Length: 277
Image 1 (cartoon, one colour):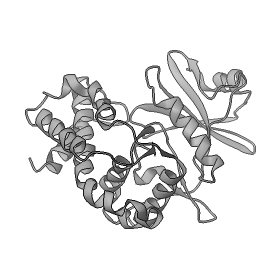
Image 2: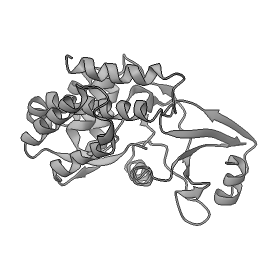
Image 3: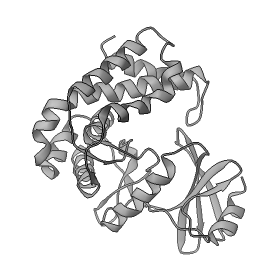
């Protein structure tokens, strides 16, 4: 894909510099700039159904005062263009310092604000958990995977009704940026989805540690009992997703976003260890 040409033809932007960005497990990205503007060009597969809804969510949250790296609308009024079998978007570049292990309070605080701004009526949990189905054919890669995944799903369903919102889906520390004015931005909405709030909080704890929860509850004290009751279960759900995802990557020899197959094996091993196996 000729990124400069796509920018000119679809967004009427004429970049003077292009830089390949690294780190995406399921996408490719470039930093484009010229004079006063900088944008990120992001491309994902044609079958990625979360991409466009995530961009639309980022725009809504940006309107609500949460910096998200919102998408730019192209010349034809669309936030996503189809190019060479891929979906392509142009996002506002978010400058700032990537958060790290000492920033759990900032991460929990902002995630709580996101869920408050994007709250939804509760949906059907059994149906939602079917997002694990794309990994179905890979769950027998090792004998422990299917029982662990099915057990976590059954435990989540047994919880009954839980609170829902639009979720970030992948709130690792590197998705958060502290800007020059001290405000924290949350970027990279490619895994966004509607679902139970507990899943996002469990993901944040998996990536960043338990202190995230206390900061989150300062924003959402109404969820104190729900988190106490359901968070351990959804931590297992989150690791079940990780197990299925890395089993799928290993089965299909997917190496995007990593340098060696050992990184896929590590992801699967981390999931196994979380189940005490």
